Image (cartoon, rainbow, N blue to C red; front, side, top):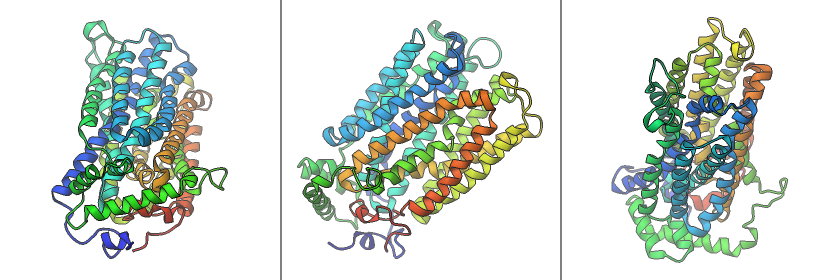
Length: 497
């Protein structure tokens, strides 16, 4: 079989000769956007609790530990959903599992909005986590499998773009609902329509995107790789013919995929994730550690607890909502930087730049909080440290959003060999959600015990470690066909040209 990288890419292994625009590319983009709606729900449902946490904490009279668990329990559901999603995708197909995720999103949104107490709220947030976990696995796998190699990075980045748009929509809707309550300022505890408090409506509005996602999941075609694995060759050819550019032959791509399927069947005994490195294959550990580092830099502390954090340093509730919304807008905008660069300069350079920038900005945030006065709920930052903390936190979001945010999902969708992709992606995503859970549930007690400086110093240390991890262990996948990922497992450097 001829070398697919040299055949389909340009002289430097990146952009191919020829035009990327056209109806085929448009079809691939359309399918990627549809699949990425799951990412929107992922971002929306995981962040919507930011505006509600203080209100339901007061209404249900919760301590900091139980309040933190109510926020973080969804992440345990995410871990289970990611693990199950990877396995169900190989049995049921990608689109059916997407629809399952949409149903879970819909039900959990309604039930969370009418929760009677903290324990049933916890149950429904766990259900939401199952849906988020499924979406976190299915969208990058589906996008990677329908995207031409030359634009796979950009299309894979749509997942993160959808996530950050979902985060922005959640924080904006939280602010609008809180400000719509009677009286002056923002009050998530105030009553709105039908006698329900604003924080309940924050959960209920998610039924709209959940419904859209469910409808799209029923309408988009199945992944060609799944279709071929189940003997549906004609359907697979129609899908490939609709998304591949004119200079790529759908029949040739089918032969390549069928070859890898036959190879995978012959190597069925090797389809396990087990390997010589602490019980797992090296490439699986690369995926797991990418996921863990993405969370251990503390990005979700910004989005889950930003209102609480900014109020703790002197912002009133309305200003805290506004600051959180501005941060989420920043996250959306910088994702376009990654989309523009990922297929041009590659994955590794962007990750290294992101790690370096996050290390510096997190250290500055930690130094700013070392200058805080007071303790507990009375802590405040004197001028100019309050503004320094806000600017540094937003610069941290810039570096994360332009690198580790989108690129980890792209890499998880493409670095694993075909025979283990769904299962390995599910395991890596589950590890990501467990890491997210640990960071999320540990922040409130650490904030109470040590103030904000110690947590942010810890996140800065993990950002520094992530730099050396990328430098030594993460392969470059720019321009490489999915069928050729086997040889890239833990190699360093650029893909062959």
